[in-house]
Length: 494
Ligand SMILES: Nc1ncnc2c1ncn2[C@@H]1O[C@H](COP(=O)(O)OP(=O)(O)O)[C@@H](O)[C@H]1O
Ligand SMILES: [Mg+2]
Image 1: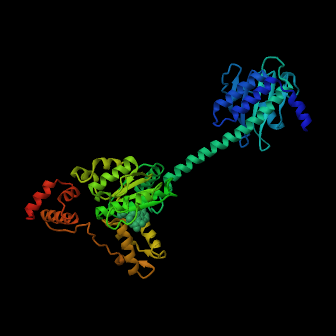
Image 2: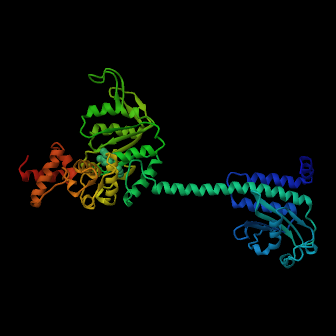
């Protein structure tokens, strides 16, 4: 058909048909695909071609049958059964791959003997194929049982246009649906199985942790990472940054344990020229330097009460004041903090500000100790063998079970050290049980004396660890300061 012919055809469309096509094309083109649109367009078809019923059926090439997508009668009721329509006519359109129109189906040779046509007393019928890649995707069939002889060639033309619009819209809708499904699946897989950067572990606990890490990375919430030393708190903090939208901005970290207060403050907040002796020029602090990025405050439990107040300002007002300055500066930094101490206890003991605790504890993330994920030990050992440049070295069964039954007070860091030592002791191909040397770290107490003696040792060690500070010692042991004082008196220390 050339343009002139086509134009001639199009001129046959009535005003109403044009209006309908325009409306339908708009509806079908709308951003969101809804089933309602299909029904609505079918209502238009019924009205425009003056049919009694219309059905939109999808052809299934695998079974050779049709299934109902939507149907309507003139009362806008849904005709639920495809069997109410003529399968013979559907098949005819399928075979011809072009529109058909019969004004008087009952007397039409080749059509009248279709049992369905007879049975359903169909008078006039109009059917158009919906083609996809030159194959019949479905059929739209409109029919009337009364002898109205209303279906015209322009109806046919209209339905043809309509079918083309529908096939375009369907293709789009199906693609969107397909993509949406694929997207859900990928998201699920990503959360469920995609590992966290640099974090090895397939155990149930680690999978759950990685899910949480992915979830919190998608937000901008402050995260408090809790876990024993060596469990992977640093790794987790970096992973959150790498998985977040801040990933292209800086990630900076500061270890806050056992650092003189003013030094820590000037590191974090920077200083103004002349703020103290040696401050010869203005200096940006690390928090400012990590603007738009992530800042990791490691061992947060150890910071002084004065610095705690300043950190609270960072979290509450998103601003910092340089040492020796008065002017606050706005910063946009995501804070991640970590500790291996029980902050709740420190709050109770009064060494950690409660308000800061709540500000930090928006999203607590507990990293389980290695002994709670022994399933991962083999995997981690392999990972470390590779990381340490000995990918060919294998652990014997006995060596592995030795690793798997240990208590791991120093967690993954300790495992790394043990593997490192084992490599040196091994023959370069196998690691035997003897090469696995497990040391008790300072965190573990090896003891076979009385409970009283045990108490004494642990108390003295803690006291030493906290530089003689009784409040902190009490907090770390989960007891009252009075208890500590009492015990010390018993021991004979004042
Ligand atoms: N899940 C893990 N997979 C691989 N290596 C890990 C994992 N967790 C921790 N590590 C490694 O163990 C060591 C200690 O981890 P780190 O994050 O510093 O622990 P923490 O900060 O809790 O003391 C690091 O060398 C780190 O790379
Ligand atoms: Mg750490």
